[in-house]
Length: 321
Ligand code: RIB
Ligand code: CA
Image 1 (cartoon, rainbow, N blue to C red):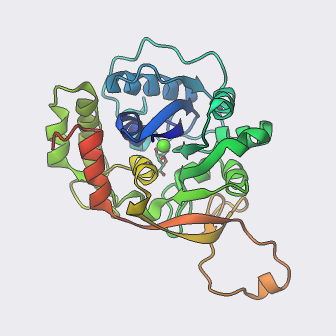
Image 2 (cartoon, rainbow, N blue to C red):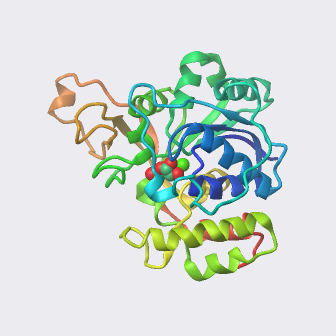
């Protein structure tokens, strides 16, 4: 029995890895992909997403354009990580296909309401589209099995010392999703960097005759050099990033999570976008004085990196290495 999924992306190099794995995994049924501004502009995200799906041979998967900017904040990109075009500036020929002619929120609503079984929503980007869906069509939430979010951190940030990029980009949207009274998994930076591939394997992938595998290899090879200063990565490796969240949907047993209260900080130049994960074993004075409890979500604290790396190489890259 395949699991129906919807992906929300800001393609992005690691979103591309996640897309390749999701559409090639035999246990996942990708019902649609929605695009949002994040790593690059939403129109560039649409172009990149269609291009990646072409390389994967997944030309049947509907793609929709979503939010051009966060709910409140200004849009900021991550071109220093993903390149000006969001796909490592490889000069890839863009897909000639077009997105569907409905907004991302409409595509998500349609796919949720038409599904005969509950759908897992995988958020790999700022959560603007998902927040708009929950506010615009709350009835659609009834068909959501779980929201698995690549986002947040129970420890150190990346966009700021304490905030992870997807949550930092649209903290209000993240707060809406995390408090939606739905099962939510936070696949954050505490596991994000552990699932990685080394440069030698990336180089072998890059020369594959399979277009999807070759694209993965070229994207990862470019990231190996670009991420040398990231001390959460072993030297000479590149993180699979968002693809790890797809692994967690396909194989939850590879992830250790704990149900914890998580609050998204919306205030303060230094703390805005921080996911404040409460790991205390008992209430403190502020709680005893009436502080409103934060929503509990399943926070990923450990990951079987070798297990997920093997899945990615076997499924997304057809076992080339
Ligand atoms: O912080 C990492 C996240 O931000 C990933 O989803 C990456 O693609 C960017 O969107
Ligand atoms: Ca992303």
